[in-house]
Length: 131
Ligand code: HEC
Image (cartoon, rainbow, N blue to C red; front, side, top):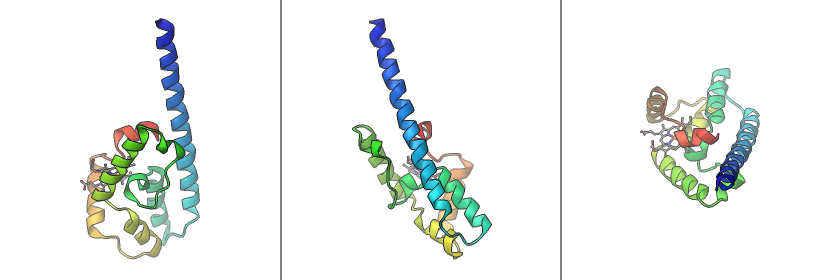
């Protein structure tokens, strides 16, 4: 009985570590590639870097490519639900566009961003646990 318990804990632990390991590499890879994209100013570059490092695009951009493990049962449903709700609430693409072109960012987007930053609401806790 005790062996089974230890084995299950080890299984969960190894699973958690592998998934967060893959997530780490995937997110870092994305952020590094994003650095090569043009930005209108050093400030815009910095803002985009923060957004990228916190992986906001996962749930707020249609263009996001998820890591392979997002196809696993359980994780897939969770990711799909988060993305669907996240996209319905907030799209980050025009903000990215503004940082690249220098056009003013949409006021409504900035206001929403301010709220989640003040409330430390994003990214969601469960997501932060892995990424
Ligand atoms: C794991 C998916 C996920 C990630 C990653 C994520 N969000 Fe969200 N976001 C959501 C969901 C789901 C909602 C819908 C509201 C809720 O459930 O809290 C949301 C809502 C929002 C809203 C709208 C809030 C409102 O009340 O209108 C903004 C703005 C936002 N997110 C910004 C961000 C930013 C900035 C980041 C990165 C730091 C981020 N999100 C990362 C899933 C995510």
